[in-house]
Length: 635
Ligand code: COA
Ligand code: HC5
Image (cartoon, rainbow, N blue to C red; front, side, top):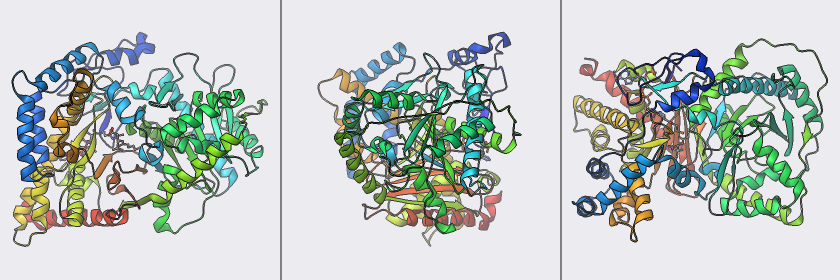
């Protein structure tokens, strides 16, 4: 997979268990074992390590330096020393963690799934589920919408064939093969609300589902997408089925049952129990949950200026625009929902718990290639049965829950501040020409933008993939570093020579790249500290002071929550902030431009998405100027 960090490992090749670098030691897999390729590949992946305790604690103190006061840091140093001392609490917890790592396939993944997703109680909408805006398509009417939807469905089924046959090319990061498990979780999956903890179910374990769900005018339909011989329906066949669905869902006064899925998870769990008391409702909900994916055929939304278009569409993908528009035309617990408007707009929203962005993006890249290339297969018109409409009996209680969900969702929608930016001045190519990591370059520019607004840095999160390890998810790259602070303070200091600024920039970029390498090799600090804390909750009566300290709270209050998600398709990804006074920044760096989204909450007086986006643009331009104007930077 060119463009971005994920490359493909050559077909039929695999890696030795503990090989991490360099260049992936290869072990061919016999073609006769094709159906078991995935299992075979997975077995050879290394296990996620538990980093050495002292290493993490030293790096923790270093990470605190730019974001806490000297006084706080001194206090924390003492707490850390106490935690680390011979025979102390830290060492006991570390030993427990190492035991857990020996006994489990991945010491972190179950914990992470629970903490980051299933026990997180805020609504999935905005707070957890990312949105993607896909390139606008060239159609302007209902027929074009349905034709595109049919093709897109066919493209997803084409990708599914590779999942089903286990013929997906194994991806690699820095020459090392990656865990492919997430690909097997994104189709036929759904999150299910629970009163304390949700669950996420993948329905391919038993009889593989053969239907998708379509939602139009808030009405859900079950659409079987395979013929009796197991072949997928052709684009023409799907199109005809979609037309039938369209015509039988023209009433627009239906209850938006899907809006219930936008609620706080405890509320939704309650509403869910009320909803599925009725047998008919229960069966309809099951049908959505089990479906391979959902297609949302959206109602038209008001036209906006070209300048606002991207931001507006990103909001549509994230939350659907509110109860008046398309928020009820979703089932937000569904892992994968493609959204198709009548005016050529399209995108997706996905429930995050089963997978990270890259597998979703790989699927989407495949679908787009498929849509742009494959010739139309004409098929004999064997009449197909009418897709089944999923019925819901709306009792007064359910009606009340829907009304409440509408109100809450509309407040969330009003609170969402979102600004998308297509940065046109340059892309990855420029950083590469300067022998700098493009990702590090962007992150340091973001540090500069933030510093220029707030006069201080903040705890900054960047997602790093742990997929080099079996069942790996993510760790954190802490982009606010001693080196980044030295650069951002120097950048606007007229006393500093450009030469010195370039030196500091180079050091900051290199430090970021070094942190990235450390993180993707399982040696970052965030998940290790989380593991020690969770181990303390399991083993001890008192939570150690290190986790109760103000510095710890500051370090985990990520005012900047960021992520790079590279794609072949020129698309834009977005997600909400993780703290009330923070920003979410997602970017897709292309060769000659970069797509950014910036989100914040309107209820926070200190944040402003458009302002940060503007400062980010300026910072990127200024950093480039600095490099271009400083002659020795080209040496
Ligand atoms: N000089 C010239 N080129 C350089 C360079 C340098 N000093 N450093 C890097 N490059 C090149 C790379 O070779 C790569 O080339 P490619 O475009 O041909 O692939 C390109 O620049 C990009 O590299 P870089 O910007 O350093 O980033 P990366 O691709 O290594 O990605 C992360 C960094 C952190 C994004 C990646 O490691 C990762 O973890 N990705 C997954 C993140 C994720 O899961 N996000 C979603 C969470 S849901
Ligand atoms: C299609 C874009 C998906 C990006 C989602 C993402 O980056 O999620 C992060 C996952 C992680 O574990 O780091 C979480 N974050 C949105 C809070 C950065």
